[in-house]
Image 1 (cartoon, one colour):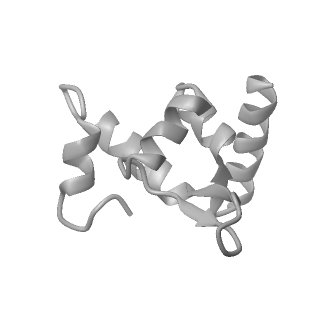
Image 2: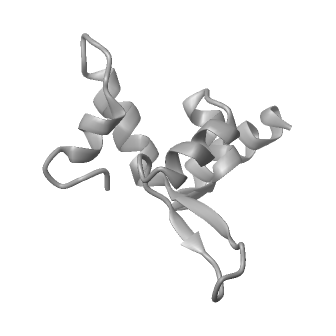
Length: 93
């Protein structure tokens, strides 16, 4: 399942699709989808909650957020703290 999510994310990335599902974003970030859901629900990772009324709905993750996080992390010599990254000017997106 994880490899299918990764393949789908790579295809979306190549096609310029502006969003990922949580499993796709998690695969790109090399973390579990459960952990990404916890980060989203704790307001530590930006996502759009798509739902009608109080129904459960689903989350979509802006591709730009994933790309920005990975690009910012790649430019550092130390680790990137997600909480601090979210608090920087301009926020996570």
